[in-house]
Structures are given as structure tokens and as C-alpha cells.
Image 1 (cartoon, rainbow, N blue to C red):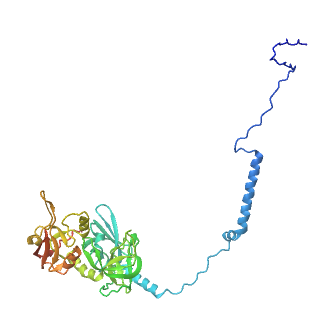
Image 2 (spheres, helix red, strand yellow; image 1 turned 45 degrees about the vertical axis):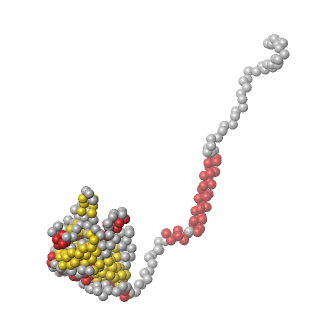
Length: 414
């Protein structure tokens, strides 16, 4: 037996009990923490059965309340429904169909290629059996190549015969087999009435042989042309006229051409219910002259003038001397009768800067307040007539005699 330990006299010491044992005390195991989201196999099995039961309930509900649809989708006896007889077409529909079927063989699709590589498209119609095709000037101007696609799909290379920006009319010529071309019937436009039915056939957005219908919604409209002239007596219609319709025919209820579709009034560039057509009486007067001469002989003074939009911009900028009314001359063509009469255009000097030209305020006593007035008055005269031009120069009135000359022919590539 071991001997007792020596006594400790220290008052702070506690007696120590000695345990004789060969066993080592092991601390109780602590409980392991479960990671978030981890489940025991039993919990996972319970979750799976819950999902299976929910899917089963959903399937039973769908089968209970949608069983009709289920059986319809799998019905081997399903058949197409019987067709309800339509009956005869209305007289109005038959009339429209007849108008389209009679006129469409005479309507053509015009494509052009310009010097910058861009392509353009428009519409036209057959004027005569010898291959003349009428369209808009703005469709074919400044182009290198022209092609006419007939209603039967045949393509024909075309040459330009003549055209005029002021009237927006141009004539093309194609070579086709005899008997192939069918000229469109021509009507008249001097007895049109607001409210009568009209029909437009064209190629909007490249979609050939498209028919749109409407009524004449206005007569005697003025619309601007490419060169600043105002075309008189234009027909306003609500028949849809979109890009590509230009140059196509506007027909009356007898299937006759009463106008040539030329433009739309729309901020977005698509049909907005306001389209315009050149009256056929004007076209019928100008086309023979274009075929004979290649251009329209219109009288001019021999001066170039500011258009209204530029005058408005000069006024907005506060340029001194810009008239509120009248036509401001930019320059006088050398050798013209206006130059011989002494009319002046703009000039420049280092001392005074830019000096504005003469302002035309009248012709033969008729007031000229705008460029539209000038063009309208000149239409009453012929080349070679002499007119009295009233003008203002530096606040002083003057009158000169000017012999009207022919407008230079436009440069059209042939």
C-alpha cells in the first residue's frame, strides 16, 4: 500500500482525494449541429411524397374540369364544320371586282435604279398600244435605268421620253409584242363631284396590283411640285395612297382614269386619309406634248427666285430688306429678256455686304404676293408674249417690259 502524502501545513491548501483507478474519464459527446438546408433521408422522403400528392390532386382537378377539352383533342371522329352558303355577291362588290379586273391589265409596276446605287419603285399605266407608259416625274427623274413590269409579270427595259417637274408627269417607252399592251380607258375631270366613288390601283410598298377604294374628298386643291410650282386643281381622295402608288391611276366607277396619284399628306409617310391626284384633263393635255417634244414649253421671265420656305427662314433670322410680300429675285439669267430689261438679282460688295435683288410685286397690273401667284399668272401667257413687270428696288417702285422665254428643257437621261 502506498504511503500517505506528506501533510501540508499551508492553510490555503485543500485536501486532495486520490482515486486509484486505471480508467481514463472521457467527456460526454456533444450533439452535432445540422447544416442549414440539410435534411435527413426520412425528411426528404416525406417531402417527395407531398409533391407527388399535390401533383396528383392537380391532375385530378384538370381531368375533372377539363375533360371535355382532353377528349376533343383526342377525338378520332372530329371533322371540319359545314360551310354556310354565302349567297351572291352584292352589286357594289361585283362592280368593284369588274373595275379592277378590267383596269389591272393596264397598270404596270415601274422600277428605277439611280446613280448612287439606290433603287426606287412606283406605278404607271399603259397610255397607248405602241408602248407609251405614263407615271410620275418624281418616280423616274435622276435615274440611270428604268424597267416596266406588266400585269402578266413580264419585264421590259424602258427609255424615258420626257417629263416635267412642274406637273409631275413623265412618259416612258417600252417595246412589247403587238397586241400585248392594253391601254387604260381615259375619262375627264372637269365634272367630278365630291363624294363620288374612286378606286386606286398601284404598287404600295412593292405589292403589285393592289386595289384601294374611297371617295373624292376635295377638288381644286393646290399641291407643291418638285420645282416649287403649285399644281392647280388637284383631286383630294381618301382612297389609301402609300409609297409605291405614285404614278398609278385613280379610276371612277366606270373604270376610267380621272387622275394620276401623285402624293400623300402624312407626317409618317404612310397613308393618313389625305391623298392627291393630278386631274386627267391636265395629263391628257400634257402627255402628247411630252411625246412630241420631250418637255413642256412654259413661259418664264428668265430669273431665279427664292421659294417661300427660304423666304420664311430669312424672315425668321431677321435678315433686313426681306419683303413680307412679293417674289424676291436671286439672280437674273445672263442674256435673258429680264437681264436686257434691267432686272437685278442679289449682289455682294465688301463695302455693303449682300444686297438683295429686286422684288416682283405685279405682272400686267395683277398683284404678285407669292411664288404661287407668279406661276399662276405666267400660265396665262405664251412664250414670246411681252408683259409689264412691277418691282421694288431699295424701296423704290419701277416697271419694266419683259419678253417671256421658254423654260429650259430638263436634263433627263435616256
